[in-house]
Image 1 (cartoon, rainbow, N blue to C red):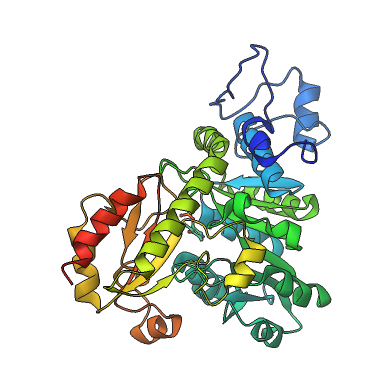
Image 2: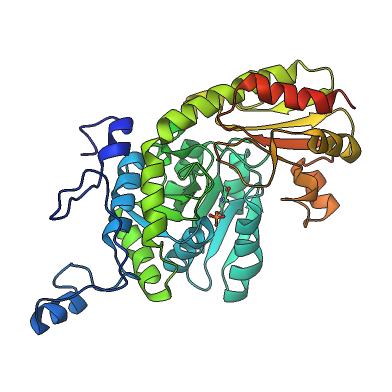
Amino acid sequence: MTFKYQPETLAVRAGQQRSQFNEHSEALYLTSSYVFDSAAQAAARFSGEDSGNVYSRFTNPTVSVFQQRLAALEGGEECVATASGMSAILSLVMALCSAGDHIVASTGLFGATQQLLGNIMSRFGIQTTFVSQTEVDAWDAAIRPETRLFFLETPSNPLTQIADIAALVAVARARGILVAVDNCFCTPILQRPLDLGADLVVHSATKFLDGQGRVLGGAVVGAKALTDEVFKFLRTAGPTLSAFNAWVLTKGLETLKIRLEAQSAKALELATWLEAHPKVARVYYPGLASHPQFELASRQQKSGGAIVAFEVKGARQEAWRVVDSCRLLSITANLGDTKTTLTHPATTTHGRITPEQRAAAGITEGLLRIAVGLEAVVDLQNDLDAGLALI
Ligand SMILES: *Cc1c(COP(=O)(O)O)cnc(C)c1O
């Protein structure tokens, strides 16, 4: 199916297997275990000779539809679904790295990913060196004989810095290092890291794949030889995606392309408006010509995406004034929803790192992040304008 159909067709069709009832919409199989026809079949299922279902910690037909559909969209051979984005990253590292291995990762990673790699995995003998997202030479310089994995996320949150996936793959390939890309912000609709040579894609399906802020989920996509290792960890350790969440996410994938394209178009319009606003000091959006990596972003992504960050003229007090005056935008740290959200990173998502680390990461007190949803841009502008007028 992967080669024959366009993404929007795959999004509504890929992976579906109809039951004996020939349902049109994907069925939801809420069952923890499966019945065998005979003792011999049970034995064959447990030994792996027969690939049928045994227990939903291992496989479930509803989860399998989501996995096949996302694999088709990312252009990957296989997908392993997980309970959350963080459990996808945990499973990937646990499956593919061992004590003594080393990881190179970007400084701009999602906060929990930084904690997991920097503070938790290090207790188990897996060390991580964090380097700048945008400096390919720094990744090369950080390589050690025991480096096993490059882990990156592009665009970064919240400043939308772009990592050059193809360039980092070239560095990693030459040294036999795996490359994993967190593709949460772009989704396969705007960026396909596997096409650029990455070995694995990870997702927080909680964000744009669900797209309506309902459930948590995650996934690892890539060549079967690698995802098989992730699956072996998952079926034993158990951070499995629930059937219900898989069903919600499968239906989320059906509208992913129209949502992402609409949200990205609205984000560009809003970013353009913010850039011209007298109370705004700076806008960070990969779809604007003023973005320092506009050319790379235009090459690597189909559009700028739905995340816009901007600095108000002022500091915390001024930024909070804008947040507190909003009547439409939701004050929440989540993103990827149909409802537009507004976040003050310095006191929320990036509140626990030191002021020095924040300064080094470019997260100022005047910075705000918007995850654009599906409302009319004029309504978002009016809401923000009322707050900006108070500065
Ligand atoms: C939210 C997020 C995660 C973690 O996903 P959960 O589903 O919340 O566990 C990982 N990476 C990025 C880029 C995210 O935005």
